[in-house]
Image (cartoon, rainbow, N blue to C red; front, side, top):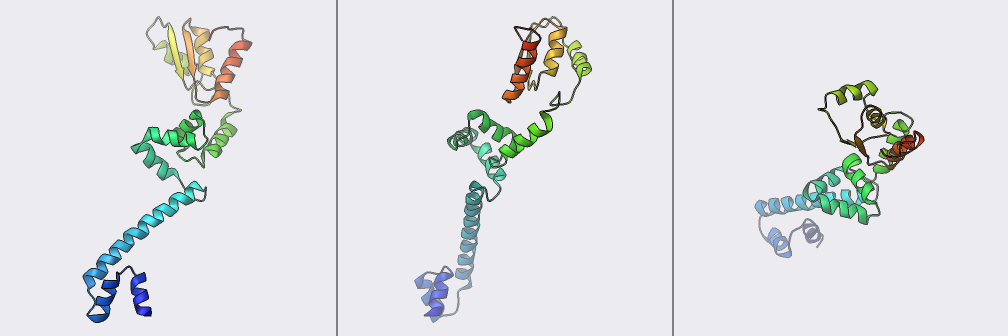
Length: 188
């Protein structure tokens, strides 16, 4: 009886257990069952890893990357359903790729860069050098990823173009608005 229980636990059917007891072991059947069991274990391990990651007990980056490749819109919708605002969902997709690490990533980014004048490489001279290579006259400038607006101010001081600034961090846009408001510029 115990042998039958062990064979059943090994994944054999009752008919296959009977055949094992009455005749010589069929290695092809055993190999087939072993392969099927290995596949089931692999699938269960993937399921376990996903659940652990969703509970912040594991790593979600690979799962997010796969979902983002096959269904980016569904991935964003799912993140929003989890309570993230659209901007936060985009941050998760673009920056950290891991919803459990997003807040830490953004906190670390702000801790490092918040006190700095510039959030990226460059200088006033670099901005002017690049601007001089642009064919004149320039009437509109779109500055994507403006940070705190260091380059924006340099451009505003050196041209009459209408400058539109974009950044995915609200505190950066607030800093640009504040800088231009304090310099009595009504349009920026």
